[in-house]
Length: 388
Image 1: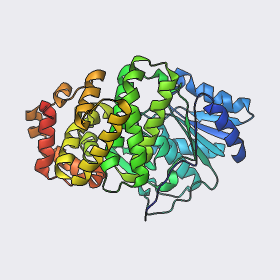
Image 2 (image 1 turned 120 degrees about the vertical axis):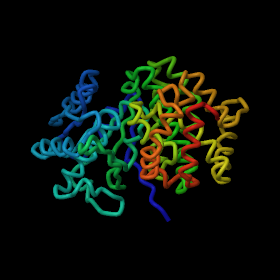
Image 3 (image 1 turned 45 degrees about the vertical axis):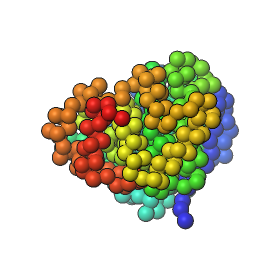
Image 4 (image 1 turned 45 degrees about the horizontal axis):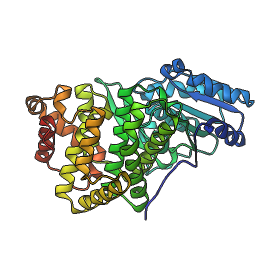
């Protein structure tokens, strides 16, 4: 037995905002939009706001979401939202904005609930009074389809909390291909490869299912096929739409299966090195795929399944690792950690902190085989030197 949680509705394509408005009319007339200043400057916030206002909704908004939203940031936004008393919360932005909106949703529905206690083991009671609509502007995090929420606590630096509940999956996800088309090349690559990592880790997760396998395989197929093309044709809305959908599918997969060692390492190394999450997890991924394939027959079998699908669809015989290398070389993405200033000496000097971070990360528990400390360090050493 298990639980498979998804948004109630997904609307997609260039008419997605019109479809969103029609569905939203069923749930009230007061809309509170959660966003940030980047999205405001790009004009996307005004576009969504105007769509609701033209349809007769009363709209209030905030652009105060921090780059890495804290609990106090969410509480501040929630106080403002509670004064407005919305029927619908709309999050437009990247994963941080959507995560912040999830926290606001919890606070509005259950004012006394402890945000630190968000867990799939405890009922929250959301969705009774307010609906959450998520409009992602990047194609990578999958937050519009997941029950995860990442918030930071600013004590002794900054500590991130990865929380989750099946209740906080957004009611509606809106995939409009124009919104991610403003991403620069580097962010298109980083978020796209993050989505690929979601798919490949979900595929071999210890709690994967037939549901998640189907989503993981299809999303990986689309990313291998279309990511190089969309990088070269950033305003091609057909390609953007496919990558946008693939990122959400990967999010659906990992939200219901878990991730693994590549993300556990990336969550630790990324902040230490000051490297974008998508970039660092992508550079670690090939070495984790190799480790898993050598240590887990189940994982090796899943990788072979994906290889057969990719070879049939893309028309070129390649092993999975070979195909990953080919994709990275096409995109110009690093295959080694040295590119980020990470050396063997640095790994050794920071060994204790790295190991502690990796083994305290909840994603590690979903890896198909639990590595030892020495396994983790060997994966890292290989990644530093580019020895796949």
